[in-house]
Amino acid sequence: MSTLLTAGQKAQLQSTLLLQRRELEREFSLQLGEDANRVEHASAALASQEDEPAHRADRDVDLARSDLTLQSLRAIDAALDRLEQPDYGFCQDCGQPIAFDRLRLNPQSLCCTGCQSEREQQGAGQAQRHTL
Image (cartoon, rainbow, N blue to C red; front, side):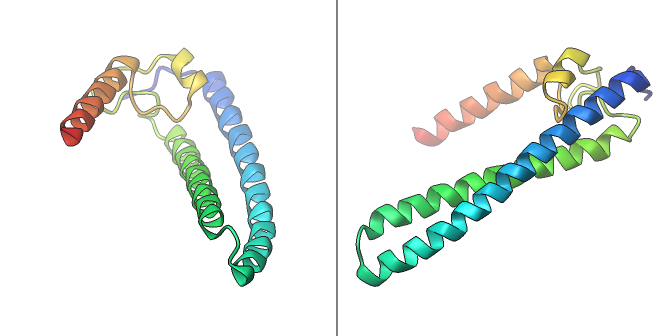
């Protein structure tokens, strides 16, 4: 399967991915700095046992935010790796080309819009079954 993307389009996507990666790395760095300050504050609060539930909730939110940032970084790295492969830009589900406009907005896209919609509908259906 050969890609329909031109070298210029691939370069544009690579540039977008690298920019997104730098922004996320900067964000993650800031999160780590904030976490260090929170650890000091949390240690003092734990020593006095003040607002322990609030501190625990803050910590959980910070951990979730860091996890999301790491997941995004992994998705960008995977997209950069796929960009070098001849099947980048093709839907993993149906094998059809993913529209360049979609890739430009989200270079990590694995599926065309039609297949992505199907995935989301299936996911919503499964979520409804689990809540019943």
